[in-house]
Image 1: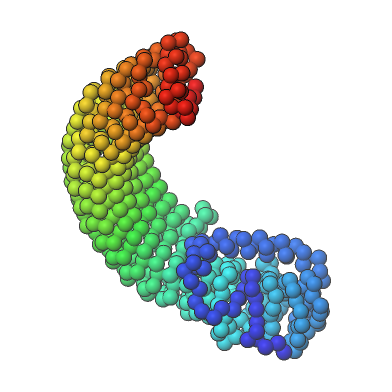
Image 2: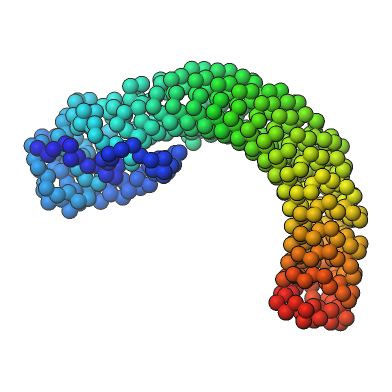
Length: 537
């Protein structure tokens, strides 16, 4: 009989491994069933081939048929298989004992036309003691789990309906449509995602995850969960990532996430949450990423985010927020990225100093709102801000001191507004600005020396406006500018010396064809001064 210590099922069932897989190997399995699907495709392909070979109905006289096999047997016991290169399949049998298994593929027939109620010795834990599963084993359609001690397994995909609590020692399990409530003490990744509309989870009871002390990643996405009760996640003090995305959650209590002191990422995106209460996220001391986009949030109470001192990324985009009040972002001293785009925020409802205290903020996204104007103190305190996005609003005028205090800003996007006028001195504090986008507005005139203080600017976008002429001194001070986009305007005239100080200009984009002769001569002179310049039209 074949020595079971040399047993090898390398593609689907078991692969020998001397040590625990590295984090990289676990990551390669992904956090879901991607790998399983790939193996399943190989399963089906091989199964079609083997379907043409001989099949029998009794264990006493079944034929072992495999591609390129050099032996065919009527009895699976007491034989020595010298060479099986490709695959092995046992189907349409009532199997009591299998004393050897080898090959790249081992299939248990999905039709359920066999029984595993007897002592399946080869799959008992005493036969698998030195082997680790590092490729997916699909148990979703079988009761095979009751014969396996998954302390020897590391990845299993199962529907959870027939598994017993003693069979949850593996490191990763994808539990689709599962109602399992027993403890799985060694589990590190748990996925309760559901894509079958008829079998979605509608509630999560307190105590469900009791005993999962080592769990690091938990996904409850794509279900029908409506409410998160207090204490549901109690005991998951090692949890790093929690996803409740794409559910039916409308609200939750401040204590809902209590106990998740080491959580780094919380996703509540695409739910119908309508408001956030004071201290909604109490206890999440280590949280770094909070995803709330795609909800119906219209109200955020003061001190909602209190205690989230380590939060770095807050996404509130695609909600129905109208009012931004003082104290709304209190306590977020470590926040670096704030996205409030695609809401209903207007100028009247933005209170001065609302962003005070966000000393670490690097990016502020206010795109696609209803902002018409901005006061000088709106951005007070954002000393480290480098990226400000105000595109797709209804701003009409850029006033002096509007960007006061933003001396570290490197990118400012004001495209797709209704700007008709830019007052002199509007950008004078933006000494570090590298990119200024004013495209898709209604600008007709740019006053001389408007950009004189922007000595670091490398890109200036003025396309799709109503500019008709380029005057001298218009671009004075832009010594670092490399790209100037003036396309889709109605420029017919360029005054002599208009580009005189643009010594580093590499690309100039404008409609050359409608220029008068004098203007074309100016561009020819520019080409002589800057022989490598590219003029696009």
